[in-house]
Length: 177
Image 1: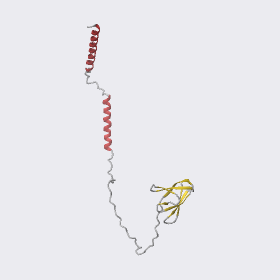
Image 2: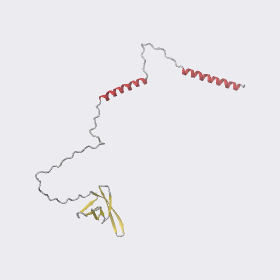
Image 3: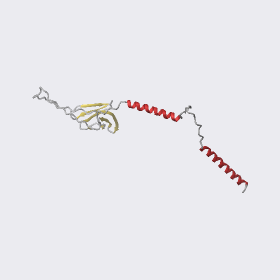
Image 4: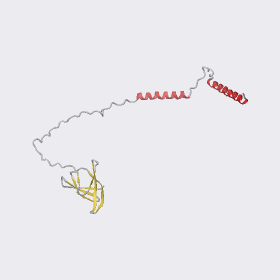
């Protein structure tokens, strides 16, 4: 055995002995000296926090017990309610009289002119009226076109459009806003 090898073994044994001594010292805990009954033991910081949480939770339980209970819903949105049927009452004093009914005028549909476009053609400028209805439909009409079965486009100007009502023959004007 060489001197180098022997010193390596001795060093290795020394390191192992130090390691074992240190590990044995860590596992043994020194027990504190018994305290007399007159000394007060201080709680650990985690015990203090746990006591505060317990105190807050008991206060919360007391407040929830004193809170008003929610009301019962007065209706169920998932069921239909029964309807009451009203009886029509006959008007008094008008029996036997016949009134002449006037023709019922059909209401004009809500239309709005939202724009006028122009394009050059060999025959001249052609304007296209862009009209919207409440049904969110867009109508792009030139002169002579019909809008539904109700209107015919009489003229398209840069600032508005003239429509002829096919039912009443009246003229309706829509202007840009």
